[in-house]
Amino acid sequence: MRSEPLLSVRDLRVAFGGVEAVRGVSFDVRPGEVLALVGESGAGKSLTARTVLGMTPHDAAVSGGVLLGGEPVTAAHWGRRVAFVPQDALSALSPVHRVGTQLELAVRSVQGLPRREARARAEAALEQVGIPGARREAFPHEFSGGMRQRAVIAMATINEPDLLVADEPTTALDPRMRAQVLKVLAERREATGASLVLVTHDLDAVREHADRTAVMYAGRLVEYGPTDRILDRPRSPYTAALLASVPAADLPRKSRLPAVPGRPPAPGALPPGCAFAPRCAHATSRCRTELPLPRPLDGREVACHHDVLEPV
Image (cartoon, rainbow, N blue to C red; front, side, top):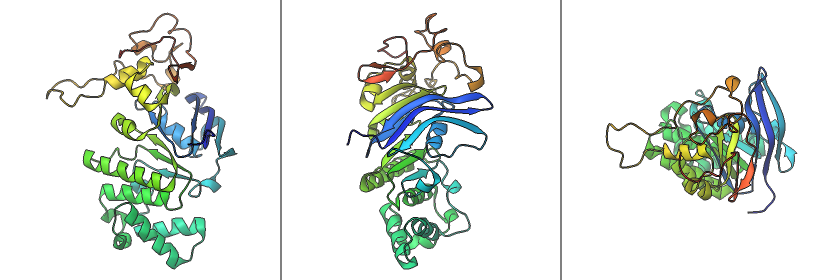
């Protein structure tokens, strides 16, 4: 991978009514790289990913820098240089148009191909995600959930964009379908050479697919660096607690599922200092009064006052 980033995000902030939901997030994604955004619900992962593509609600106040290849991301990049894979495929597919027709429109709108050539590209795109080309005549409701998600991946990659953003693309699927869809997404990303920002709760998927991981809590990055370092040797107490909450495969039936203690704060009711301090076993008076800034530590960046190595 080249050293120059494809996507550069600097001090990204997103606020609603003066309340910040994303608070100074910075990261890079290099060409061909997979970056995972992880954290509990409400951490700001999806909002960050959507803001990168300019998909924030109209009432959002956005500041900071988002550059794709050194240029601001605009609507002109959508489908051509950047593409989005949503959590709910039905939100991206029109219920009144055939799947093949929608793929044709996606490629014709960007590349201006003749209809016959666009149809051939649409059929090939479906084949590439494991759907027979003949099924192009089907409507979205005639596909299973897994097939719809694969069709959306086909639509996102048909123009071979530089950057894919996938927001919880397997949440609505069962474990078997989840693995299949992630495999298809990985195959299409590798075939097109695209970079990927993957928003997910699935830490097993992160370990398998992500080169680097950004752990979010209360709208900030608390740990950011190579995936193996973060998952095998977390330095942030929040990351350690998050990893400890993953159920073991041999967990006895009827056992209480592990969880991070306490509840995440609401964006408008953040405590002073470190937002994780009320839930952290390592918190000191400094943690409760002074906001920890990101700093280099053991080959990654960590926003914590302490050098924590063991799970909380």
